[in-house]
Length: 482
Image (cartoon, rainbow, N blue to C red; front, side, top):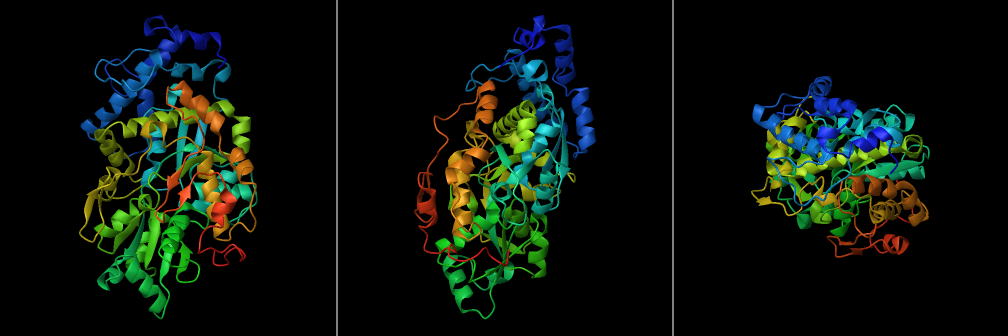
């Protein structure tokens, strides 16, 4: 890493930081732990829901810890023995590695797995890296996609399949070179069915399979985007139980925040979406959870921080600083249940997820109840950091989503899987950001898993893997219904 003279001074103890950098530190973190004026201004612009003093204190601890990491001094009230010494965060705000663009328009949908972006933008995690993050909530994935391609958004909370569909020129948009900067979250999605199906005893795979094969009208199941993760989780679960998602049921696309209203009105029989909408369906008594996405693939990849490849090429330092800010916010959320509770209260606000805290908090803390009387602490809940395991943009993750696009006929031919994944997954940029923060990096960008149907995935032969499923649509054109 190349740094200017002023940046190098930031490696010295706090007492010897240059005047300009001491001012920056004081503006970011007050000595008594209070949130800075700059942070308060950022929070005002974002208009998040007010915290209790206790919840704000949780964030102060995290921000204070970040400041001490930046100056090389450990906080007296909190230790972090798992993290090795790291490079000075303040070196990213000056010198040759400074962000080329300091104000970033960041898109997101009202889902709990957008939490790390919301925390990074509103709680002071971006300022030490020379960034201001302007959150822009979107109503649908298609709107987010269009604004990302058009440049109205610089980066966004995105679906893996959305990013790859744009890159490959499928799913209703022209081909645009895209980039996955990092993973934002793993796990935490759900497949949910209606109260009338519950009353009819259709509460697991066997009666559902009987229902779709013998009823006069096909069930209508919604997901959030034609090439998105929710479509692919829904298809995978159905197919694993012998239900053809393209023939045995009807599917349609709805924004995630509209799922519960459509279920309540009887316009759909079920849906797959991110939280808190599955939990909200249970709270309102209009549905129940049939399966979680982590029951399909424990610790599966989910949302990513995506942008165009042009943004990375024009603003590489900005992209790296953005990853660093979001990594710090992710680390903070996963650091304790107290931090998760304070985060849940923050994101419940009307400018973010805009949902009752009761629908957000339980599953955000890993506590599930399915509306059928079953309650459990999930072994693979929604996670944002996991010591960095949730954040590396693994090549194998991108490869897997392409195999499913191929399996269901959305890709008519096999792409050059590995070449495409290497183009999209910004592994080297992520390694630079994570390394500067002392976050552990695996030896390989491939990982393996065994999914619910017993199929093993390791990324070694994606073309053969895509062809290995009994139910598929590889011989047919892309689905007209999508």
